[in-house]
Amino acid sequence: MSTILQINSISELHKALNLEEPKHSLITIINVCDVEIKQEIIDVKVVTNLYCIAVKDVPCGLKYGRTNYDYENGSLIFTAPYQALIATETQEKNEKQGWLLFFHPDLLMKFSLAEKINQYNFFGYSTNEALHLTKDERNTLNNLISNIRAEFTQTIDHHGKSLIISNLELLLNYSKRYYDRQFSTRSPENKSIAVKFEGILNAYFEKSVTVGEELSLNEYFSGKMNLSSNYLSDLLKKETGYSTKEHINNIVLKRAKNKLLGTNDSVREIAFSLGYNYPHYFTRFFKSKIGMTPSKYRNVS
Image (cartoon, rainbow, N blue to C red; front, side, top):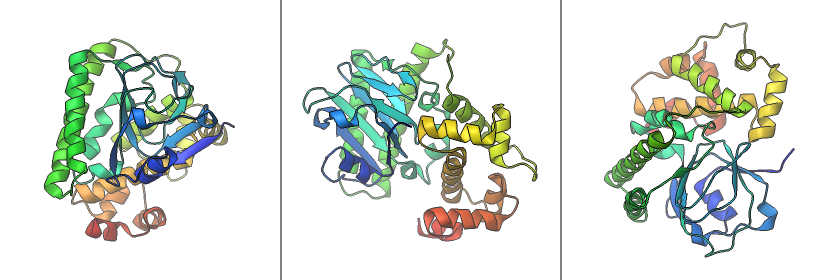
């Protein structure tokens, strides 16, 4: 199995890249010229729980999932939490230009973007090409990045956070416009296990499909993919670093947080909407991952 480096926070990301402490715990913008990629990190799968939007002004070597990125001058790429990104070329500081925007899903809590972000299909594993930008398009995104950076590098109150989210949503909307222009007529080819699983997983939670009590989610998803549950889990672990159960837990936790902070639904209603027949099982799961009950999380966040 390939070496997998898991990064679980903005702080861990800065540490892994030998950068100074981040200005904010949930969002950062990194100048590409400050990033050094050493030989020992080449071909290592890097999997974070962060969203990433990145622009580089010169070609570089990247592999996303199993696909080599077509990453040329002024190109834009997107990755979502728990997707594998691999560097295939070394890089010295000041060798290349551009920016890397990373943000944690928790940044979006209490904002409508927390749910809407699932609609931006360029974050999907099926996206296997970088988006090539014109000079004007790149300037538009660069201006939005400057606005976001200006907000999170100063003391942030709710108004400041709202401005960050507003600019971030503008950046995503512009990106979607550019992406649809370039790729809307294409269909993904050579789908990997991760691509297929991601689609089935998201469809399940979007449609609130009910799985019979005699059937576990592992069995449900493996059945949809015509694979044994153990084999599916092994393939996902090899490709992304996370087993079937870990992928399910990650999306359940994300959606639970969104619902707790973005709706007035009761904990019982949220548990049922996430497929739990018994709410106390949901409470136990949430507390084991977050360190507090859903009710307490809602009250202190």
